[in-house]
Length: 336
Image (tube, rainbow, N blue to C red; front, side, top):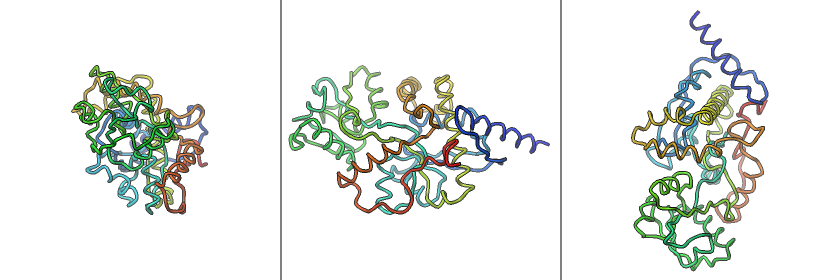
């Protein structure tokens, strides 16, 4: 009787998840199954919908026992996903395209953050009010090649000779490099995180969002899996249920951001609750899909435009391989 009651509860939860304006679908009864997610970084507010889903029982409701891990190495998530060692990993749209260009059979199956967060950030003393003001300035970067291409595109759009801008690789010490005046601006910081943190410290950051300065828009954070898992109907079902449950977590955040943060703060007690709440407030609109689309939606024309931009900038060299870089087929109501 207890097992039957559990199956009935799961089936009811799946029916609820299929609502909210999306097509009804039949997923059938599910049992509690292990599911492993590898984050792109340490747990933070960019992952808030995932932790809200976990804390509020949405994974359990769809029959998943989810384990969330932080990577030991920032390059690990894509590699682990490609090798099939995790069910899903979180990565970045540019990284997915680069990995596929290098022969990795990975596919993005849903967007977590649906616009670029990467920005150029400076402090008032540098006098950088817009891209044109970067002329003659020192810009710190994390040494990521596609972000260097972001800078070239932004400077070209603003009519600034790239030879007039000095770049320094400061690794991931972007904010310290800015605060110690090692550089005048940094490229690679997130407007929703480092930008918010600098505001809380009353440093009045000046922020240039890359997609507002000439770089085509893209999905900053995406869920990635291997081509092999996409061919497995059971694995596809688990991914579909996982993403739907994360969508429920995102809606929890909409209704009550403070309550939705509980799971994240439990997972990473070292986080500053005030900062995380402020970051969630800024990021919340970018967790949400376009009107009429399911949570996790990836806009095909935006992927096409960004892929074309990467090719023009020499970041992708191989011809497109088999399969697709992204699919919406595992989102609620899609691919039926």
